[in-house]
Amino acid sequence: MTSHASLEYPFDAPGSTFQEQMRNLPYPAYPFEGHALLSRIFTPAFYSFSLSPIPVLLFSLAYYLTSHTANHLHSAPPTDWTKPNAAAKNGGGGGGGGGGHLRAKLLRWIILAHNALLAIYSAATFVLMAPPVLDLFFQGWRAAGSEGLTLALCSTPTNDPYLGRWAYIFYLSKYYEVIDSLILYLKGKQIGHLQSYHHAGALICMWIAVRYQSQPVWVFCVFNSFVHTFMYSYYFCSAMRWPFPRALKRNLTTMQILQIASGTLLTNVYLLVRVQPARVLTALTRSQVSTLLPASIFAARHPAPSQIFSGLVRSDPGSLSTSAEKAMLLGHYAAQRALTKSSESCLQSKGAEMALHVNTMYMTPLLMLFAHFFMRSYLKPKPRVNGIVSGKAVTRAGEAGQKAARQIERSDVPSK
Image 1: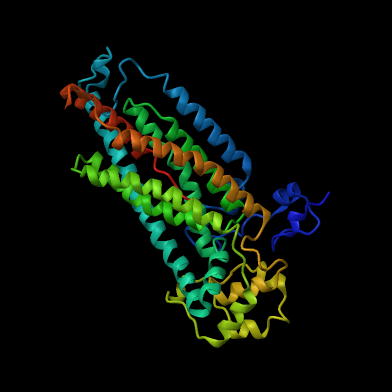
Image 2: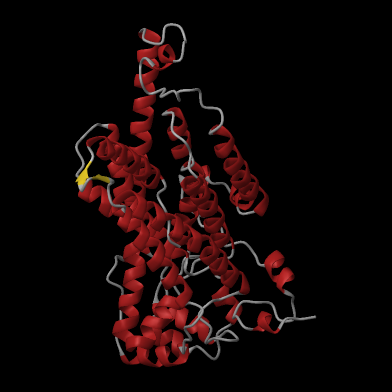
């Protein structure tokens, strides 16, 4: 029996069930066509394989189970392999010798490089993705006020070859980020539920958003890369043993919580918003709106909004919706929207809606886990003895707070 919801979104196939839509929706267009370097690294075959459900689900499950199993494999006391005398403390021979020093030094350099790489990559992702998205919003507001802004929100071209390639690479980076858990294990620390739940869930959420071309994926990429830039910069400073103010460290944790809450609220706006693309097209013909970004950032040259509007009736919807190179210009997306059925829907497909719901189900318990750790680490009152804070209690409370803080800091959380 055909679901009525299958006719709700512009790009859903009429008369198909939910299962058929999920199975048959084409993958996003290959985003590295014509890019000399990236097309060699991410081949079309690898791209298709990475977007299939089996690899991501198996990897997430294997990581989650392995991380919890690893907690039971620690020696007693746990061994910090980044310390030169780690083996000697646990009865191993020669732990304090040249081999132990070399191993510890090598591990510290690897951890340093890991944190520096992710800090630089996160900053690059933010710089590459945030300006085009913000520029699209600016175009919409200048052209048609709140209606133009709404259309920009609903038509953010995260499946465009330009934005799409960075969103896809950001999805792949979630595989690499599980090395954070390996670092914790090598330092003799427990891999907490917050950490393992976050990494496994973030990978699945990014996959489903990229696979089903969910417009809100830009929120995940932009918000998360912004917070990660500061988080991994802090990890780098910590690995270098550079001083880092506790107040600023606490603010980083607050940023993570705000990222989850604001990102979840913003993505769910897509379920409530309705657009009127024809009105925006009319407004575009009366205004000369152009992008503030250089022309080279866009995938291809496209006609002016007035030309798109004048040829709207004669245009072929298929040629607009399946073009290999889509414009990141508001007029193009307004015309494309106006040509589809259910043009007033903010989301484009049932798959995009499913990705949004999966994200919300993942983020809600994650927010509660973060809030719990934050309160336990920073807001819980210190024990008092006869009205005076005990010195030993202060030490124990400080150690407990630092342990919880480390778990929080290592559990960098995305917002999608």
